[in-house]
Amino acid sequence: MKNAIIIGAGSTIASCVIDKLAAKDFNIYLLARDSEALLEKQQDLNVKYPNANIFIQAFDVLANSMDQITEKINICFDTLGTVEVVLIAYGTLPNQKLCENDLKEESSALRINGVSVLEICHHVANKLQLQKSGTLAVITSVAGLRGRQSNYIYGAAKSMVNIYLQGLRNRVNQYGVQVLTVMPGFVDTKMTAEFKKGLLWAKPGKVADDIVNAIFKKKDIIYTPWFWRYIMLIIKSIPESIFKKMKL
Image 1 (cartoon, rainbow, N blue to C red):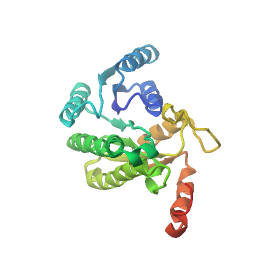
Image 2 (cartoon, one colour):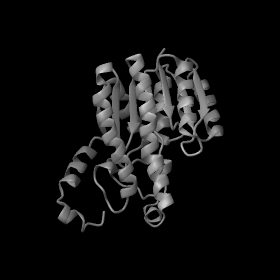
Image 3 (cartoon, rainbow, N blue to C red):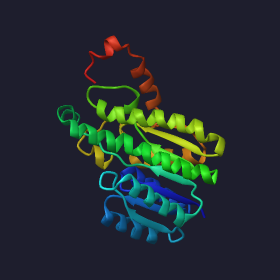
């Protein structure tokens, strides 16, 4: 059987990915903040996918020190043995206006969505490099491709992750390790529950399908849904002299 670690297992997209991997008889270690929700997810998966072994562990990037987080990841690898897939799927959608007026809020948003992800990628990539195999998949966002006044704090964190993953991919490729950058557009999840939905919004199950397919096809970067690649090409091509006057 194959093994997977899901960091941020409480996210809507991650939950869909977990079901798809469990259906393929993966043993899965779930890490998330909400211990009760983790236990419920474990019990549900045990009923639906009896061939998959499901492990759980509480995890919080703000409450836990980096040493504690790396120890939790070590426990996952020690329990599972060879790990084929590690998915990093946690994050928040910060209040842009609040961040603009409160440096602590801004720092927290950058820490959760950017710096902590890089630190975890560092440790996971080194573990995969030692075993000379495996996939590190990280959910970032198309928001990281151009700074917009409506969400540039979130976008800055995701841009940091995007660039880091590019370099990491280049470094670990020689060791047989795949690094997958997942760039969703608008997705109908718990994090975006208050937003009005439209034609550009995707369901989390669709995004999860794209992620799982990309993992097995050894992709480097995916936009999900696919049309966001072309939307962002247009947005990135707008000259700065015009873009700075746009209310985006």
